[in-house]
Image (tube, rainbow, N blue to C red; front, side, top):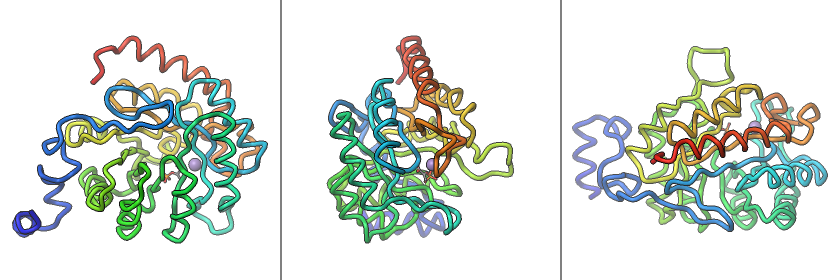
Length: 291
Ligand code: PEP
Ligand code: MN
């Protein structure tokens, strides 16, 4: 198979131009049925719609527990929260590190929600794997191939975010890095790409969801929070993600966004998140034929 790929890549130029091949592990042609990832109390992929919610960063016991309980009450299926934060400025809050992971474990105990948290560096992978139910690889690490190989050797599902400048084909090839190491539990996440448009933080590429759902059996979710960067637009785009056929959304929620150490302006307040959950439930009941 390696020989066949080498021949195709020679003809097409580069692997990214050749794109994922039919025999690639992530390919829908190779594996027709949707991959379904089962976690305590929730399944991701296969026609359901998961809502992952929580703060951008774990900031304190009080902040995480208040927010975790609020998203649980509203019906979220997974709790998110960063302990290691990829910040543009080295002077911005960088996350609580191991203490943040411990707090996430306590929030899981309190709410029963599985947790997703980001690994930024292979040095912290063991700790993150021990704590997380889903290991997140962020947009900035989508082509950190040595990290991808290492998470590919982990036994936990991986949430792989599309990079700011990553094509759909490149995203699939990054998923392939993880799967080729033996970890087939990969969730893809569209989170906005960088375009000429500056009105929003990034440009949410919802068409990528349609393309990905056709090309791969892996679950595809959408993060509208990092795409738009403003809380008032998060709801409309989360609804659009459901309508376009995504397997779920990941949304930032903070119990007091004005006090957030990171991404407060795009974080929903608990009551806004509850409203969004009600809207998504209504929309789901109206779209029974969603793939
Ligand atoms: C995040 O989800 O916490 C995050 C940093 O997102 P991204 O990698 O998409 O910027
Ligand atoms: Mn954030």
